[in-house]
Length: 601
Image: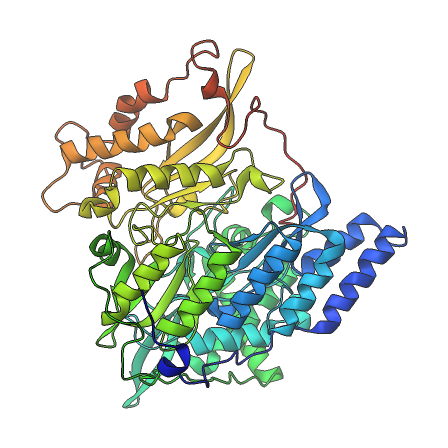
């Protein structure tokens, strides 16, 4: 396929990063702290607290290697930044990166002495890992469809970026009782506003004859060993009160959060223990005090719609449609509110992307996106926005060349899986690999093309802590261990019916499913659904009807599903099926050994 030169199709003044998030001096300080640690002048725990504040987790069973989490505020990342991460992954990591469910990039298995080099490289292109881990305000998220969503009231991206800029390195954000998460979303459908500490959805109302921008603000949601759906603070929070509200919530949590019991020190526990009305009143009073004692203004850098940067096609005409194009367009693209443009979602297997693929993504962002950058999403994916509809076949052809053209991004086939035992100290199972296995099977069976399954989700965590967000999945799993006699095998607890939209609810824990029976169990549930569904009903809606006890004709309740699954999930003996007792990605016997977790350090 021949192409016109980039200089012919795009001008040189492509967008560049607007905000310098990184600081070179932090890389120097990190190198100094590692040196002091190696000399025995500071303790392992002191170094641990420091490196977490600067975005470096210890890797599984060792802290001589780190996972570096790169903050991507609002998910906005520019081509030169993507290329730098490709370079860093080859020089210091494993030649690939990982896109998380919180819009970050992660580089795994970086030697402790090399962390400062990675931080230096990030700072050079405007990125940072500061406060991407530890007891601080984490990456401020924003829906990848913000600004192009047909259902949004206004684009919350500038608010998300301004919030992130205000809070980064802010003194009130350095030693909270636990991590703290903020999420902006474009509309009720495309976000997770109700399952984070502070969730925000744009809203506009008329006040004294004038339209006023503001937000629905939700507080106290979150996922983990015990999960909660957030509460709406008030009917309408005007934009001038946005930062005052966020400051007030952080101050209340900092002052009242439980620093003694690490298992119950997230803000959602404080809300639950105080009761919503009491917590709400404390926050509103605190906001009044903040208004009286501080003067803060949220400065918005309002993006205009990208100008049409080219009058001709980027590439020459493709002689014939590439194989799989129609399937990919159906399952991976969404029409923007701007006529003639689409957002294209790139399916990654459990968020993994190689260095060469990163470079290809950077090139394609320059070539195909009118805004000259990409967004990371909420489900370990990458989104090209502002792609001309007529350029979608050309984009797909290039994705095909680099192994990034898997279909199913906007369907049940796009499976979320946390890192699991590949790197996490707390993981009990290899959720990362299982998610890939499920995704591959779904695509093999072409279930991504089944409209009955399109709005459903599968999410997998390697332990109860919900990094894979299993509790908001239509079918969710978290890892554990089972035993037949003296022989252990990996298994998952399955939940059904979770949602993160305007009708947010947590999944109902339903059954214990051995790892090697997860795929047969999902397929059995789909089989049951197909035999029981009503006309036009999707899997997600059917499961909720069954949960509510309104099923039928044969499957009337969750208990009926559990009964039908018993033959599928029954464990054999190790003599009958030795492979059953081995986790995906491992070649030895299963054990439930874990290390010291660092999420609460």
